[in-house]
Length: 370
Image (cartoon, rainbow, N blue to C red; front, side, top):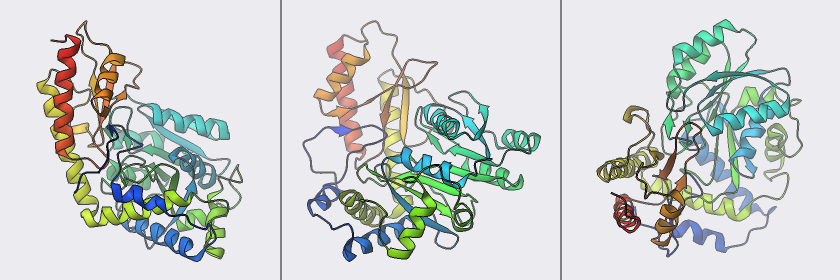
């Protein structure tokens, strides 16, 4: 793909991301929120999002104003009955956020506690579900960007289905870059947002929901603004959003989806991100940095590295020096280890990662690290 044309720093984070020039240019036009051309654009975006996960037949796409967390709360609040009880595998900050949302909503929660570098074991998950028949749902973070840990979605979905429960997937950092096939992976909902692997800009979440599950959820929502069922029904009846839509975000996402298709879809984006990630980890190892995760558990989304034990290392100084060289990194979010993170996603290529690695080496010399 062509590199983005910009003098801004490259964002090596899990979102917002560095975007393509064409995506940013799509925001130069103003749209009327009730205008037919904008309604048609919304419909086209939803159709493309459904096709990415092969959800055209049994699922529907509901876009929602706000960040990805808005969409997660909307899905949990709408698709789970007030009496529902949710098992949540716990591996990091975004799993904790799901538990916090469920707790605020007053729904039952069962924690499946894991280490931050430990993927979900489908057999253990199935045993937990069989041991507690009151659990109605499993809420899974596909890739926990606290570390970059990837969970085995297909096998987890099979275990949940065998137990007769429903699966809600937070695919915030995988949608569009890692394969999800709803023809073979049974899920009540898959949730993501515009500003992640689709390489749009932040400001819109969306839920790919099982049509039957959504239709039966009319009385569930705790919220007016976050009621997915009401949002979907209104859009079906009018083709319009219920409330003021993020028009420029939608226009940017429409262009980003065209670029996604032009690049070669999920397979091509996965290959580019895999190449970015492999280049990053190999290069950082050569500079003496130790990855936090085992290679088998690493998603090509964001990589976590242990903080060096070198007395000259200080993350704030390291960050500012890298920022001055044109690269924005991400602090660690772990509770058990001192770490920092470097993203592999966005409109970037191996050449950008290689230049970043050269800047890391230069920064280490400037800081007096060995």
